[in-house]
Length: 146
Image 1 (cartoon, one colour):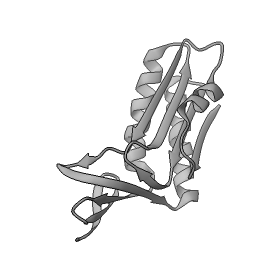
Image 2: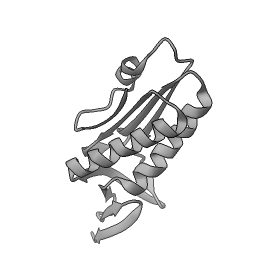
Image 3: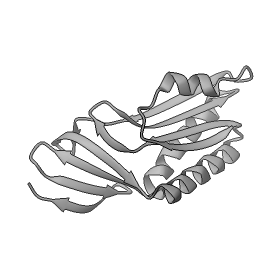
Image 4: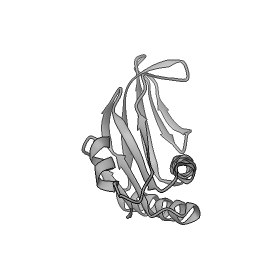
């Protein structure tokens, strides 16, 4: 199973772990990207994620397949959530099942590094001071002053 998904529903990490579980695996690695309450010294109120979904899903699946192949993994699941996210909400989950932990950890890190750069996902950060910033691939695209 090498699957990438987009959703607007909250991410349930336990359900994802159960979905990927296999008796051949000695390791299940779960990475959750969650919304934090600050960014570059400023207080964040919430984040909205937007994307052109067909393109984002295609790129997300490409990364999933490439990393599974590179690290010899059969079970890789990547789920990215869109829409409004409050502080503490999970925006992305990477779940990997593997006979051994090392390739699973390495793949999870590489998947996240690639998602940040290659997948066309826009992050709209709402700050306490009233400013709003649009970010793509960790680069500021547009700022709306308070």
